[in-house]
Length: 118
Image (cartoon, rainbow, N blue to C red; front, side, top):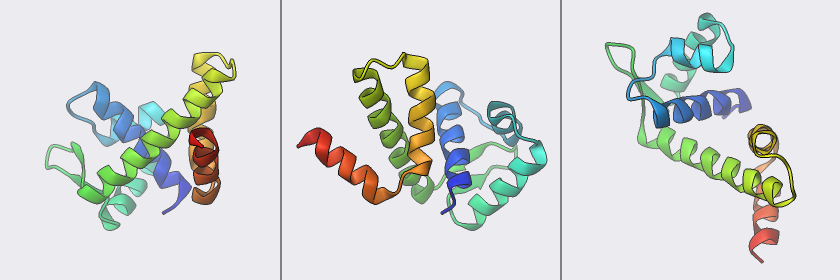
């Protein structure tokens, strides 16, 4: 899975926490990307079995997509808390946590988590 698709999944997840219906245009606005770019990503996510698109354009996670978005959410929360505990201002901690979440390998993330809980 590409890091870029992770960004889209996280955006959809974040929007779904606030709104009942999330469409491609909402994702484009949230990320600051063109609707064309979002449409390409949606096609890729649909082809990979991560999302479904309802006839009205509402984006729905499949079980696989929900699992991946939940994993991303937990990674963001982990790093956000780690940064907040280190004294980083909350909005900056969130921005940095989002960046860390897609840039860091799974092995490095697990090492951080083990260090934090161990």
